[in-house]
Amino acid sequence: DVKVTQSSRYLVKRTGEKVFLECVQDMDHENMFWYRQDPGLGLRLIYFSYDVKMKEKGDIPEGYSVSREKKERFSLILESASTNQTSMYLCACEQGPMNTEAFFGQGTRLTVV
Amino acid sequence: DQQVKQNSPSLSVQEGRISILNCDYTNSMFDYFLWYKKYPAEGPTFLISISSIKDKNEDGRFTVFLNKSAKHLSLHIVPSQPGDSAVYFCAASLPYGQNFVFGPGTRLSVLP
Image 1 (cartoon, rainbow over the protein chains, first blue to last red):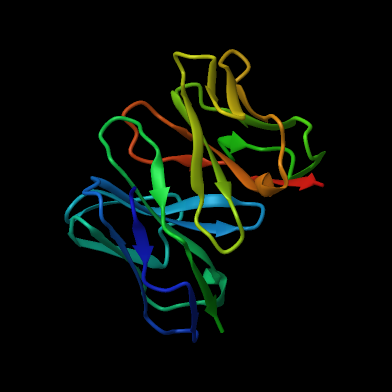
Image 2: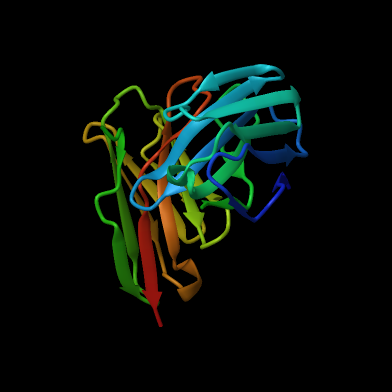
């Protein structure tokens, strides 16, 4: 079974803080993703990466950056947290290159106060 | 503008009956579709998928139907069980696509 582990289940941060969300997968999958889930909006793609050190912007990249220094690890960085970034953050991986299902981590509920 | 739509935010069904969750998409280039189930405070889990070369795919109690001409897919759960109560997300992908577009989700409640 694919295991995708996110470093925290719950986080509370202050406005203006730099926030790091970590994600590790154990199946050597090529593609990794960061989504945020908000009520009524579903899952929206923030960034994805198809290889080490490669990244592509998703639909809502503003206020975020990512890092993929190793194949198994994909980090999401909130440069200066704001209250509108309060959300559920979900990391996923996919084997690639052909279409297969994505596997998700358990999610990080981030609250910015 | 949402490319993947789930127009029913919620659905309630009696245990043992059929649950039908619907999904519409606007981009005719999508060629791979998936359904995910999500419990509160957990990540989504993959349920079933279908390629655009098929019109039906079954896995146990779950069947997905695809109508390409109508740009519509549906997930049937028969029989529905209380443990099926969750939010269901429809997702779509382009050929050789490296990301997925998700719908807003439908909350299914299966009543005992």
